[in-house]
Image 1 (spheres, rainbow, N blue to C red):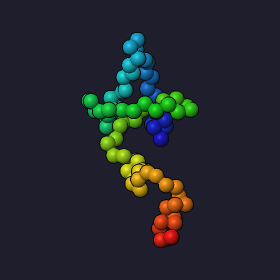
Image 2: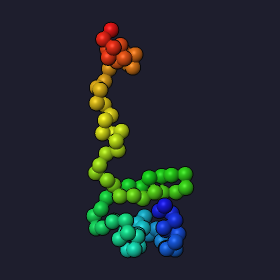
Image 3: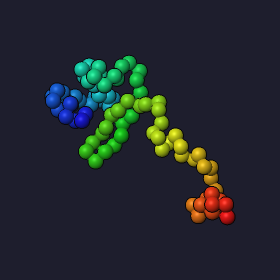
Length: 83
């Protein structure tokens, strides 16, 4: 979706000597990338994905490790069954 938005605007950007890229104001406004917003750069097969860093964790990250460590699946099933 971002690619289609990007190409519909037709912005050309250059990487500066220091490796900086200026995101056009129209796109910053549209995606809420205001001053001091942290972003992530994620390498993909097609290039780099730039997205705002969110404070909310992925659902899997929120429950990862809830059961604690140790044991294996078979032991857990046996414990649940009361054996």
